[in-house]
Length: 242
Image 1 (cartoon, one colour):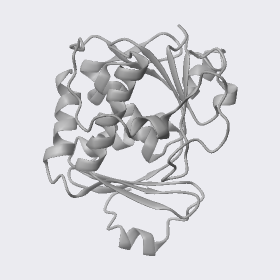
Image 2 (cartoon, rainbow, N blue to C red):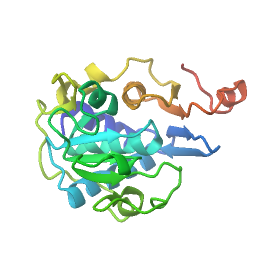
Image 3 (cartoon, rainbow, N blue to C red):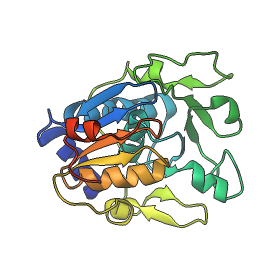
């Protein structure tokens, strides 16, 4: 793994690893809290799923057609840990080719699998916070992330080195953010050690904010737009940053 990302994941699993790193407030009133150790566990399981089931490797193009959510954050970190080149839905739309990145994704993880025809291997991601499987019949050939990922190992050992020049993010205009620059060019700057409120809006923007918080040893409170951010919530979660 390129050094910046490797250091970030090491921080999550080893520095105050029992402390919360990601707290999710969902639209049905659910609250899910992941410590650094638990978040790293989900990232490892997902990385193993991508490699073992989907043959993902450095340079595999992966479309994240998902909203900001604790699951999509785990999936994004796993994709980067494997060395995948990630594209986001807004980038796809601006390229004028809904459902495919400029070069076409090899893998699409989506909460709307019925709309993902022609997007490589399709993986349906259920969004209810503790969903154990996709709640309906899947399109032919689609895989169920929630049902599949739990069977995979809790530790990830990369078998292939990810060159630092590999594209971590592919923009619609063909420009890239390489793995060597992922944190410096994509992560939003923030103060050290803060517990930061991150609105669950556009996935790329929310991930950018979260990466910035985590690389400063902070903690993220990710709040769905339907959940009002009250003074009580801010106080209870000990939020110290915007």
